[in-house]
Image 1: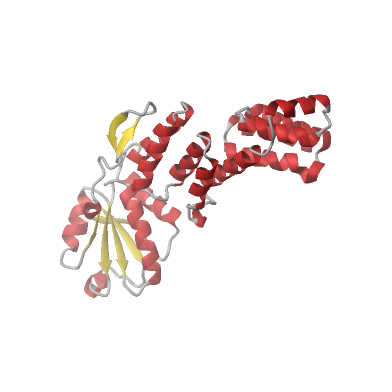
Image 2: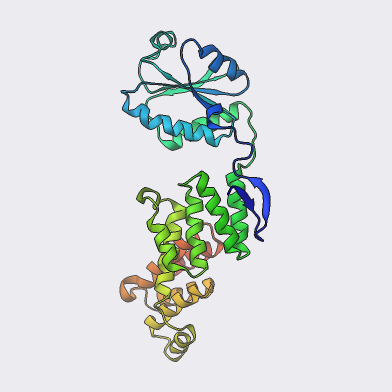
Length: 316
């Protein structure tokens, strides 16, 4: 199912694939005979990236898929042609290809950019974005970006079913979209399914778990699991009121408050422990605050304010 869903659970009428040309229209193999048509002529309408490669070239096998991914994400703003230099030695000679991988970009019949050698995924993405800018592309947000925005709105409205459906649709198109994966984990957590959230996170490739959105979701999961062991909120509050020096009770109270959605009160409880005894339990309160910050995100206003308060306590 590809139709977008609004926060109220009704179809929005858009499609994640709408407006995006098919892969076969954007990426093709070419040769000496068809280079003029596939590259020079085609570049009159949009930039064409030419990937010179060979079957024996290891770096080519890594670079090619990254280029294809970036081209597909551009949704027709750029195109890509792949040329096997072993099968097209005359063309490679004419263009003075001396080492591979070699990538040239053509626009309006002329080479405008390029590079030689392996590149990181971020460099490839920047290369394609630079070509789009040079060509004056102004595509607006992609269907996936629109779906992510709708999912965020759904979560803010506590419409977790609609948000989960949106994230699921995104993952059908981009199985390793970190925002969608993290969003699915948070939806499961918000619905009380800690086990499902844990299984979802465990299914994510290890290399992706270090991404900011997934690291934040993992921190939120860890906090939820800890909160389940903290004890009843009212009982913990009573213990702290009876004995303000009971740091264990105040620490557990912070976890229970966080689980109840009382984030500011939870942060204040931990900050009070730091104020009273920053070294308590090997700086457990400070470390737990850092987990809060990671779960909330670095730009969350409460993260910014609580970091300021923590710094004031630590360096006063």
